[in-house]
View (cartoon, helix red, strand yellow):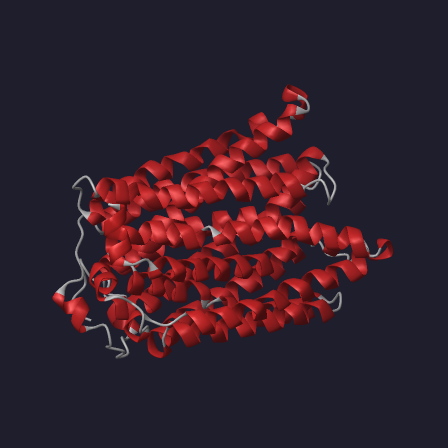
Length: 450
């Protein structure tokens, strides 16, 4: 088996490593803001911006709104111009405006404007990544490949969890938050060099062996093979008529917001629930995002395990997603185990352990959900479809952000109640999403008339 892999070639795994670094930088940049929330929400006479919880949620919601809107167009543009130039443009835009955020004033409107432009750049990363996986991997390996690059979302969050509080500690609040934006934003330009140097689509990469090319296209239909170079524009009206489109839409709408909640509100939860400081929250959040990596990679390997034992691709994918959808139910117990009066000092560790499992479940779900697009749609439509799904996830994320901010203001005296409600929502979304997806597409059917 080892000899066979050597003969086939492994350059596709170099490509997935590039995507891993891309998503790592992407999420490190977007995660900076969650660790700056305590500074933003500190009173002006104590050196902060004086924002309320709702105002912070407006900032994250505008980011998600622009991210959602632009994603749908980003996917179409990437289908047209290709993955190499598409990611390069996205990376330059998000890196520039990530750095520009360091020069914002305390005015909420200014921060919203800059963060919205930052979202324009960030919107391209997932349409590029999923399209690249569809181009470089056979169907049976796509969930695993997606799980690997998607783990960069956790690695980026882990780096931010340590780096941003360090900036605040080392430089102090006011210079520190500026340096956090500047240094994380600048990192994108380092990666840009390697992306332009090492990446080309399979058809343009001269060193790709025929054996590996044949392996990549082993389960492509004749229609898919004929459409590899087809860049004809597909009308949205045509995509929206398929049940497969709405299956992916609802899967993203109902579950993406959960991850945005963990990203933007987990540090705040730990500080309010357990009285932790801005520096104390580094390690618990670092652990949560680290454990989620296991879920991303392992979740992507479950369908491969089932496919290798003879199960059809779509059936294996949905079977894996049903098993995974049960896992986040554990987050219903977060506030029980997080009760300090009941469990004392162990409460924080128990609550974090529960959130770790739920976060790993989300990433396992996400790795498989993305791959359903390339299971059902031709490669020329993958970017557009991921854009539609990312838009749906962004809309769901906006609702979650606004609800989180509102609940934290309404229950400011008892934030435990606000987070109990949020954890209940986070627990149930996956099973509801799976049921809708299965109802819309009970059996696999590849779209061939685009």
